[in-house]
Length: 163
Image (cartoon, rainbow, N blue to C red):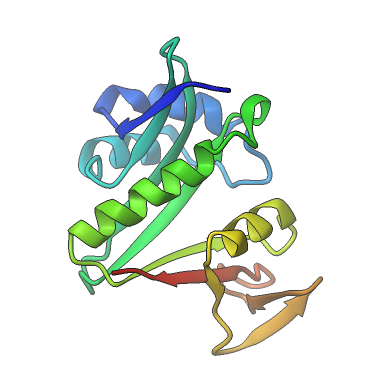
């Protein structure tokens, strides 16, 4: 049993988030400045899971849409590969969904690569649905939006309605 707590990010968490992100392949990594932006300007919807020892176990970076405040977006989710399978990722997602709901959101979106079957299975198990509208392509059983992130960068777009 791993003991941890989930809390909102603090600005200085971005360095540790950047270090942990390097271990979360095939998740895309960002420039440190992007992690810093999330921990400074989106800390009410960005989270870290912290072990009792104080070590970061995982993070979720997300935000509320400025265009449609009833929608939220989970940009990155990472749990330290050494301690996956202990409910940390699920706890981070559930906390984000709770925060988004409290802020008036009705739907949460995220994307993942169609080759990332662990991620696809994880989100399906949490009740997220794959977007099936638009220019889709089936890749190994996952419905991806063709060229979503640029030419040849097909992505699975997930969404979940929340209360």
